[in-house]
Length: 375
Image (cartoon, rainbow, N blue to C red):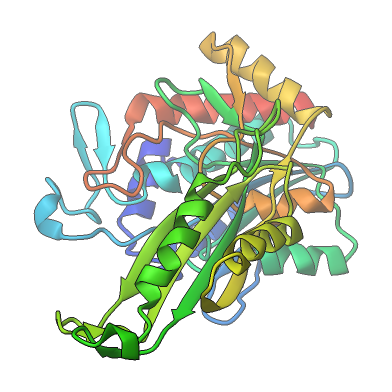
């Protein structure tokens, strides 16, 4: 097994694993881990591939977590190279998933190989939790695996997720938590009619505008020492029949709350509906919770990460809760210490996604050192 981190990343990127497809990535990962003496278990749920692998026995559990699925590439004409043909240009590896997060998984495998060569009889358990359902619905992936492990009485102590956390240079930002995410679909109801006879109709767009103004001007909270203020954003708005002479009978709105630990789901729902109820408009609202805020403070994992980045990269990292959601929202509530550390995120989900080749090797060194400090 002589594949370098770069070669492993290339093999993973070449797989068209558009969520929730895995496209053979986990088979490749399983092959490498099996050769290293891991017990590997496939955990498929519905159309989602999941992998759980362990080396060693008992507590404490150090878990590398990640996802093999990627977002669609978009128009191929916008890419300089084929997104699923990994290409090296000027020290960068281009391809969909190179940064988010197949490069991190490859670095985890290299780190694990090197760690076990030096510490074959390490304490506790070194584990991998890999899913193909992070970029899509996130229902049958990490969420289901964590539930299954809990049913078996397995408690993860430390979890390192390879999400691309870095900003300007590798390791300058480490995420120790994420904001919660709550979606709302609101249908404002009116009465359809001819624009020339507004008295015989009720325009839901006109009626909803004052309520939307109040929602967008609301100060939901001021954040706290760990989280920025809660943000509410309208992401979609649709109303009308597509012609100019018909007053629409309804308008549909999609909005999202990225919320701090100052709020919770019931509080946001109640305040939103209170604002809407102040206005003369009929509406229906459907709420969907994507994840609650999570935060790791204290414990052994964060100091190990900070020390490793300082020793190996001469970096004093920034601990952050910025960004979107991650599968950490399913792992942290079990009591697990969770951090996210990966390459720069400047190109993730964009055309010409890429990762610095030197950073892949550096990341493997840092990952190995973190594990060695804990196991």
